[in-house]
Length: 234
Image (cartoon, rainbow, N blue to C red; front, side, top):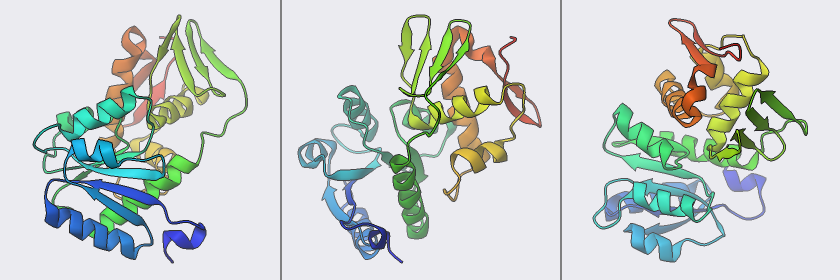
């Protein structure tokens, strides 16, 4: 069953890669899955081609001209929240951190299997359609507030910009304070329908989240060998 069996109109995906052969492979396979695919061979072209009709961007990181990271950063600055999956030949902790910090939703290393790309695309699209469903209230820990209705994290008077995944992680941990979640439990709750998620992805997101928390970073603690917990008594 293809994705479009569930929806009247096929989802539109913008593939951005300066290697024509990769664009062709992705376009062919994603079209077979029932998606409508457009290709751009540079970030500059992608900016011109991107429309509100697009539901997802598959974005190469290393391109001549503007890099994929720079394009993602630009879109997020313009308040464009379209899901972005990075494609990259690099696969280090720093690259993952950079990808998530500029607002990426997922990260696939080259060479990739088409099966993995299709699975990740479906999972990211599914997650982007499901809002964080919580009651209309706030979680308050001293001067840190998590607004479950507006999906905002506020420390003092400052709003801390979080990605959807980061917000879901802090809500999960803070609603179950003092409980330790293993990395696999976090994967099951946050990435429930997403295959190929590794424990390292959890660590990268938590590292990024703690960095954004600044002097409140100790609220999320790690017990070696067990996992993560939210510890408001710190």
